[in-house]
Figure 1 (tube, rainbow, N blue to C red):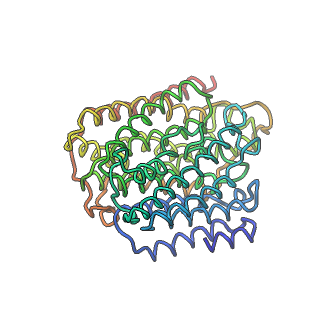
Figure 2: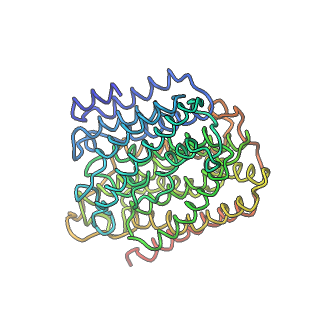
Figure 3: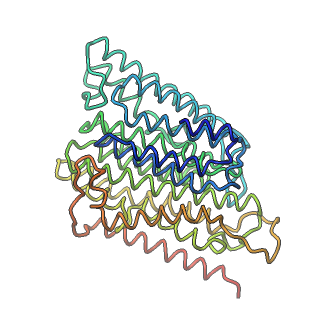
Length: 472
């Protein structure tokens, strides 16, 4: 937070250096355990990748204060995920929500869709997100006050079952789950992703879009693990995401937001199981979501800014202009789809196995089936619009060679490489998991083999499009 103030005073010109210094210092002083440690690592992962990608060009955002405010907001959420007092959690979530609203443009200042050039922001979604973030903190604060008056414990641990006659517990649950269950276009926690990146801004967009959803997921896992209400909410979210993708505007930012929204729903189902295996699976998945979500969001930053500078760039799609960036973004999106061999696959498969062992086999099967529509109707359209759309005409000088900023490529490579490396050797994360043990190796089940086929279908679709659009 202190380095964020310094970055704001420098008007955002040192976001990369100060952000990485902050990540290194905070990582060195972490003294928590369990899901609090896992959530802290996930937050630091997102902040570090966003800071690394924020080269000098991208640091000159619409508001010179945005990079600094982004670091301050990240510091607040890092405190939230580590604190053990519900009252302080409510207060800091309130402050973080205010800063997030300051970072997300509410009108035409937001990004443009890389395929059509249309504005991605919606004023009513911004206003809805403001009300929801304030209502969330208020409900959490009221619940904490009610527990204090009743002589209850205010520590961030398992606090009871919501909707079981205990009003304070129910208020706390509603305060934590409300921003997660509402879709991004209605003002949910992913609204910043759906609004798209502002001009020449990377770090603020990524942090504002991902961190609050990750932090709320960790808090729900810490306070309501084993609650059937989480399972019901997760099923609703995972079902809504592909349906909303079919009904709404065809924009890359919106598809990305719905992808993350659907993954959060799947992880809520894992968090609903009170077992060590489920807690370990949730820990793996949270770190995987941080890596995959940050990589996908940075890919959208790259394509949006490239179109803004040269609208006619890449007549066959920016995937041909930035092949290495597209390859890394593809790996990140495949990880969000839980392709075998990635970190999210390990977390999701072991989580579904824990659900089956706990008597929720039907719900586990439902989540496995919902993963297919989520990938087909959210992840694939995002890649198509971001990397394989011709864009709008004009603005490109024929023969000019475009290149992605090296810092952006490095950040994307680290995100994608981390997902593959940790997916192959998940035991490397054992010290960071709530149970201290990574899930054991297992054979592929039928739903997991279906996910392999989905990934192969995606690659075949891309190759077919390249051949059909190649010049004669």
